[in-house]
Image (cartoon, rainbow, N blue to C red; front, top):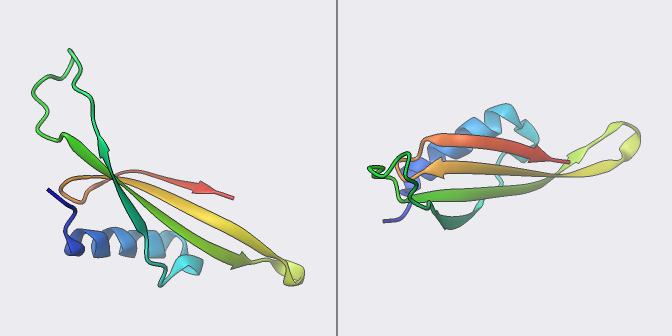
Length: 86
């Protein structure tokens, strides 16, 4: 099962709202396997997806800064975690 394009679009909209300087950036998508644990053996979600958005933000004084936003989403397209690297 892969992540639907509609899910990618909705995830991208939430990223663009939080980080407008990344608007229009197309993410790279990687599939991740979730290991089964004894605490939750009946989890139907066996995969998560890592979406990585890379862009450049303008800073005062004409400087630029690279920004990387990593989004972990489940197989239904719900955002589990969103992090920013500066």
